[in-house]
Amino acid sequence: EALSRGAEGAIFIDSSFKACRLLKENIQILRLEDKATVMCRKVNEALESFAQEGRCFDLIFVDPPFPANLCQKTLDKLHEQGLLNHNTIIIIHHHQKEEVCSSWENLELVRKRKFGDNLVSIFLYTRQEKS
Image (cartoon, rainbow, N blue to C red; front, side, top):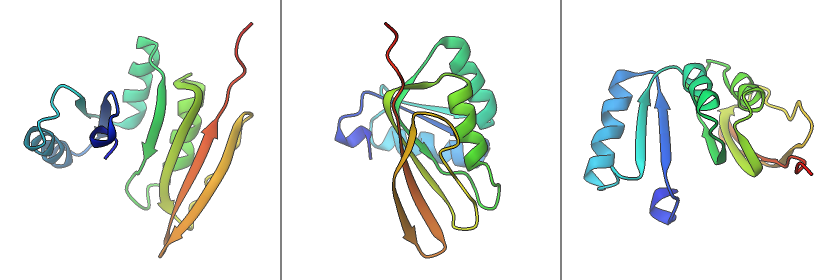
């Protein structure tokens, strides 16, 4: 969706070979190969490689399988690895029983919506600009 609305690029991370294959097929069908990358690996491995490359992101969607309870761990890892730009928006899809909170400074929960047993939590990260 973000790509169709003008996003510069998107990176999809999934540890399932089948899911990665389907993502690649859809990217080809939509002719978005120049804007989309699929990484078939565990999210922690991908985040560590992004940190080593010095990458940061403006918009992040976190949607792990239920009931993996990976949302808070992923949110914290994004911060620990320094992968967030100023005003990064983080959208997390999680089960209502999984607690996801802004456990660190400069992260604000701006919206939470319930859809059946699921929640979508939207966070905004604002970091202090270095002077």
